[in-house]
Amino acid sequence: MKTFGTEHTYPATPEQVRAMLADPAFRERVAHAQGVVGVEVQVDPPDAAGSPAVPFTLVCRTEQDTSGLPAIARKFVGATTTSVVTETWHSPEAATVTIEAPGQPISSSGTVTLTPEGTGTTHTVEVKVTVKIPVVGGKLEALVVDALAAGYRIEHETGTAWLEGTR
Image (cartoon, rainbow, N blue to C red; front, side):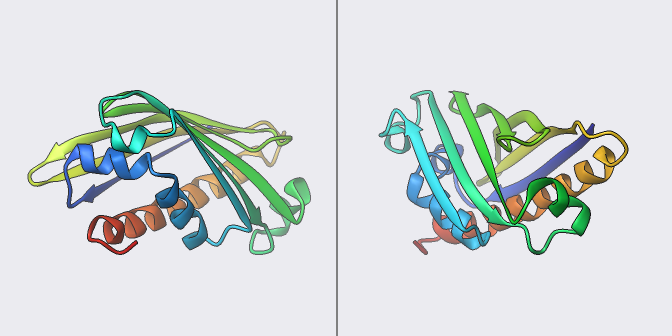
């Protein structure tokens, strides 16, 4: 098991950041910036972006091309892989997150928090990654952690532009 953690600060209130994170259009923009092959976003309830106090669940299913991965990873996942990120927002500033790869021995779970920081908001993600493959599981966990770091870096760049009006 490997642990992944990241913190990014946005130039907005926690309510504004949460509304952005609940917006399917934002999640689709992030997925395309990450270079996915396909994306599907569902939010329940559908109007969660407009209601900062309402608990919601967001499910983002993406398909990625694996041609850039090392051969050892492609051997297990194939030419493309699917990931399903589920965020369950129980409060305005905290969620649980799971990241699954259907059909693969990979699982990840953790937390997402939004914390006021001066005039902005710190978005913190902490996830434990497990790959249940003997011998090479640790190497694959490290690849997943690297992919998470790159993905959340792109999400932050896209989010900062989104909050500044680039949509």
